[in-house]
Length: 412
Ligand code: LLP
Image 1 (cartoon, rainbow, N blue to C red):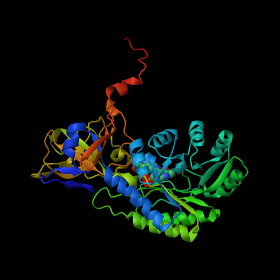
Image 2: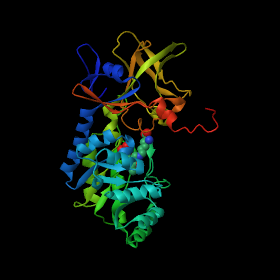
Image 3: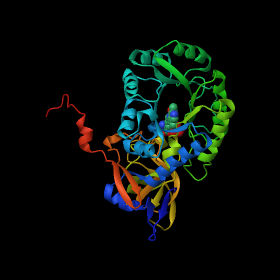
Image 4: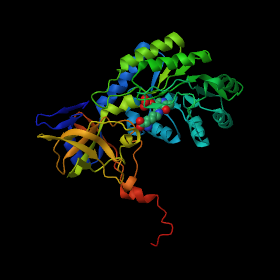
């Protein structure tokens, strides 16, 4: 898997740490991060964009990994942050990010989302609808710099898993309504329209779609700022072919120069392609059932990784630190649902109880969507770097689970 290596004894290593040692120290399941690789990726993203366009800023989409430690590490490498609600903004500021490097989104921003963004003094609030305009005007004490999210009206292509740029999307202003919305913002003294925002979807591997989106928004007039969203895909399994950050940046910046201008401020919001490939999730095998199929069941599943059951996302798990004859197995979770799979039909060495299973490329949207299905405790996040580990987020405890309960109707 990316970012991993084997030590002389054949043990799987991340950031100079044996995964087996991390599992022994912090327990399983655990999210294990190669911190050096994450920082290098953030630097690479920033440097590539800055080299092609000096007025550019790479904003990490906090929704893909909303932890102060992760956001903070990426911020230290010079990236800004894209937040989508007050909670993400709080995590971002707790991670040490400067408000002037934060942009905030949301198709249904609450008063609290808007007030917290205004109070923090973030760089831009992205207006999604007329109610945003009204709410921002209501809470502003000085003109608030805003961007307007427009729908480029591009149709989904089959390989695009999650599209948000189609005409009936719940995100942003439909193309036909954009001129009126621009006029409405111009009439509002407490809003200062600085530019446009567009985001067409996630896990996209066709660079032409990004170019089309840039071309599509050029028709709304000339602005100083353009935020072109995120969406670059990552390689989950060996047959995935994805563009490099360099290729993506060249095509995107090229299109921006052609259609939007050369002296613009250019923002991008990568989430998945910033964090996915630098993390693996480590589980322990709880039981193995060899019947019609081989089921290798682990101590986690859709409680810590919803991607498979929600999107059919493919992963390539392995049984680590074990060799020997292989078999075709389904790697399943411990939750009470048939869809609770980590992967189907993977060739793995015949597993035994206590073996470690790693699922690589889980850095994006797995931690975010972790939940307490079956009372499962959300796993810790462990940073590995230069042979040393640091606990970035501790494992949830049963006390955490019980803490919110008010025991209504329960006899003490
Ligand atoms: N900007 C905006 C406005 C977004 O809505 C998103 C993702 C991004 C940036 C970052 O996109 P990325 O570079 O990560 O593709 N829950 C789904 C993914 C949802 C993506 C939501 N928006 C999943 O688990 O795959």
